[in-house]
Length: 251
Image (cartoon, rainbow, N blue to C red; front, side, top):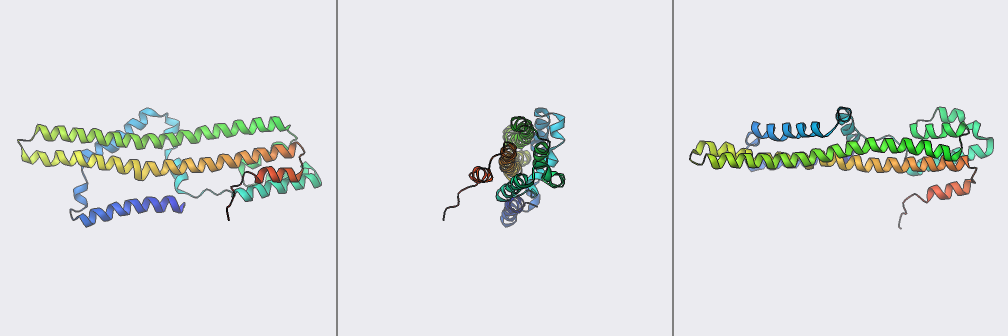
């Protein structure tokens, strides 16, 4: 479980629940079926119309990525592993790494170094792995865009619901019993839209974007490391170039 995602999401919903409780009106006052239909149903319909079925079928998996800790090496650990493989290659030859590569748990690194063991030329190795990385990023960006659109659509549907409620209220000013339900639709649709856009879709979108950035940098490091080993660069050069990617820690 990603503690920051789960903690932030639980925190914002907990604070909203606490505010409702302290407000004294009770939770029932904040449940309105027409508002739910307009915002939740409308957002789902808009999202379905905007994206292909293949992308929509992965929405749950994408949300899971945001809420679960990704089991990958830190950047220093990844660089250390690549330097280890480079050292092993210099001492005992590239083929000596074959068994270690077969047992590798990092799938992207495993594929890149498998090409290295097969004596793939550096430019070919880079082209193949960069193509794989680009397609991977396209899939990630599609999921990020989906949650971005969900947030925007929820806000828009909330505004539409507000207008529906206001029109209904103004049309029934002579009937006091109809003003309350219409006002509830007008206000609660805005609230529902804001909560979905900020406390659900916005959180997932932001976390997916950050995780995608970290993963793409790790893949670039892997490609560069494998390419340099294939080119026969010295251990010192490999270490210097890869460590230059690490953020500078100011004392």
